[in-house]
Length: 130
Image (cartoon, rainbow, N blue to C red):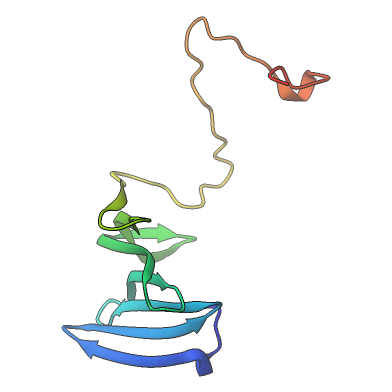
Protein backbone atom coordinates (compact mmCIF):
# COMPACT_ATOMS: atom_id res chain seq x y z
CA UNK A 1 0.00 0.00 0.00
CA UNK A 2 1.23 3.45 -0.80
CA UNK A 3 -0.85 5.13 1.91
CA UNK A 4 0.76 5.85 5.30
CA UNK A 5 -0.32 3.76 8.33
CA UNK A 6 -2.26 6.69 9.82
CA UNK A 7 -4.71 6.44 6.86
CA UNK A 8 -6.01 3.09 8.15
CA UNK A 9 -9.60 3.71 9.26
CA UNK A 10 -10.55 0.22 10.49
CA UNK A 11 -9.33 -3.37 10.71
CA UNK A 12 -11.62 -6.42 10.71
CA UNK A 13 -10.64 -10.05 11.32
CA UNK A 14 -12.49 -13.24 10.59
CA UNK A 15 -12.30 -16.62 8.83
CA UNK A 16 -8.52 -16.41 8.47
CA UNK A 17 -8.69 -13.04 6.70
CA UNK A 18 -7.89 -9.50 7.76
CA UNK A 19 -9.39 -6.48 5.99
CA UNK A 20 -8.00 -2.98 6.21
CA UNK A 21 -10.11 0.05 5.26
CA UNK A 22 -7.69 2.76 4.17
CA UNK A 23 -8.44 6.40 3.34
CA UNK A 24 -7.13 7.04 -0.16
CA UNK A 25 -7.69 9.99 -2.47
CA UNK A 26 -11.39 10.90 -2.63
CA UNK A 27 -12.52 7.59 -1.14
CA UNK A 28 -11.26 4.40 0.47
CA UNK A 29 -9.52 1.16 -0.37
CA UNK A 30 -10.47 -2.08 1.32
CA UNK A 31 -7.54 -4.48 1.31
CA UNK A 32 -8.20 -8.14 2.23
CA UNK A 33 -5.22 -10.30 3.23
CA UNK A 34 -5.06 -14.04 3.98
CA UNK A 35 -3.35 -14.29 7.37
CA UNK A 36 -1.90 -17.80 6.92
CA UNK A 37 -0.36 -17.30 3.47
CA UNK A 38 0.16 -13.53 3.68
CA UNK A 39 -1.37 -13.07 0.23
CA UNK A 40 -3.59 -10.29 -1.06
CA UNK A 41 -7.03 -11.84 -1.64
CA UNK A 42 -9.08 -8.80 -2.66
CA UNK A 43 -8.92 -5.06 -3.23
CA UNK A 44 -12.04 -2.87 -3.35
CA UNK A 45 -12.05 0.80 -4.31
CA UNK A 46 -14.86 2.93 -2.85
CA UNK A 47 -15.91 6.50 -3.57
CA UNK A 48 -16.49 9.11 -0.85
CA UNK A 49 -20.03 7.72 -0.31
CA UNK A 50 -18.63 4.21 0.35
CA UNK A 51 -20.04 2.87 -2.93
CA UNK A 52 -17.82 0.22 -4.48
CA UNK A 53 -16.31 1.52 -7.73
CA UNK A 54 -14.24 -1.58 -8.55
CA UNK A 55 -13.21 -4.89 -7.05
CA UNK A 56 -10.25 -7.14 -7.80
CA UNK A 57 -10.19 -10.69 -6.39
CA UNK A 58 -7.21 -13.06 -6.40
CA UNK A 59 -7.78 -16.85 -6.21
CA UNK A 60 -6.22 -20.27 -6.77
CA UNK A 61 -2.71 -19.42 -5.62
CA UNK A 62 0.30 -21.44 -6.75
CA UNK A 63 3.97 -21.35 -5.89
CA UNK A 64 6.23 -19.85 -8.57
CA UNK A 65 9.84 -18.80 -8.69
CA UNK A 66 10.22 -15.02 -8.90
CA UNK A 67 13.80 -13.74 -9.07
CA UNK A 68 15.04 -17.02 -7.61
CA UNK A 69 12.64 -17.00 -4.64
CA UNK A 70 9.43 -18.94 -4.13
CA UNK A 71 6.31 -16.76 -4.14
CA UNK A 72 2.59 -17.44 -4.09
CA UNK A 73 0.88 -15.95 -7.15
CA UNK A 74 -2.78 -16.13 -8.17
CA UNK A 75 -3.86 -18.36 -11.05
CA UNK A 76 -7.16 -16.44 -11.31
CA UNK A 77 -7.74 -12.68 -11.14
CA UNK A 78 -11.31 -11.34 -11.27
CA UNK A 79 -12.11 -7.68 -11.89
CA UNK A 80 -15.65 -6.50 -11.18
CA UNK A 81 -17.08 -3.08 -12.09
CA UNK A 82 -20.58 -2.14 -10.90
CA UNK A 83 -23.20 -0.97 -13.38
CA UNK A 84 -23.12 2.79 -14.00
CA UNK A 85 -26.87 3.28 -13.81
CA UNK A 86 -28.64 0.77 -11.63
CA UNK A 87 -28.18 -2.96 -11.15
CA UNK A 88 -25.76 -5.12 -13.08
CA UNK A 89 -22.03 -5.35 -13.34
CA UNK A 90 -19.20 -6.01 -15.75
CA UNK A 91 -16.72 -8.72 -14.92
CA UNK A 92 -13.38 -9.80 -16.39
CA UNK A 93 -11.77 -13.06 -15.27
CA UNK A 94 -8.14 -13.76 -16.14
CA UNK A 95 -6.92 -17.34 -15.66
CA UNK A 96 -3.30 -18.40 -16.10
CA UNK A 97 -2.47 -21.98 -16.99
CA UNK A 98 1.29 -21.45 -17.05
CA UNK A 99 3.64 -18.51 -16.78
CA UNK A 100 7.22 -17.41 -16.34
CA UNK A 101 8.16 -14.36 -14.27
CA UNK A 102 11.03 -12.04 -15.15
CA UNK A 103 12.49 -14.27 -17.84
CA UNK A 104 15.94 -12.90 -18.59
CA UNK A 105 16.77 -12.28 -22.26
CA UNK A 106 13.51 -13.92 -23.22
CA UNK A 107 12.55 -11.72 -26.15
CA UNK A 108 8.99 -11.95 -27.35
CA UNK A 109 8.60 -13.41 -30.84
CA UNK A 110 5.11 -13.13 -32.25
CA UNK A 111 4.06 -15.46 -35.08
CA UNK A 112 3.09 -13.57 -38.24
CA UNK A 113 0.01 -14.92 -40.03
CA UNK A 114 0.58 -16.06 -43.59
CA UNK A 115 -0.13 -13.31 -46.13
CA UNK A 116 -0.24 -10.54 -43.49
CA UNK A 117 1.06 -7.09 -44.43
CA UNK A 118 3.92 -6.16 -42.10
CA UNK A 119 4.92 -2.54 -41.54
CA UNK A 120 8.00 -1.64 -39.50
CA UNK A 121 7.14 1.58 -37.68
CA UNK A 122 10.85 2.23 -37.14
CA UNK A 123 11.43 2.38 -40.90
CA UNK A 124 8.48 4.54 -41.95
CA UNK A 125 8.40 8.30 -42.24
CA UNK A 126 4.76 8.47 -41.13
CA UNK A 127 2.31 6.05 -39.59
CA UNK A 128 0.33 4.23 -42.31
CA UNK A 129 -3.08 4.81 -40.72
CA UNK A 130 -2.65 8.58 -40.39
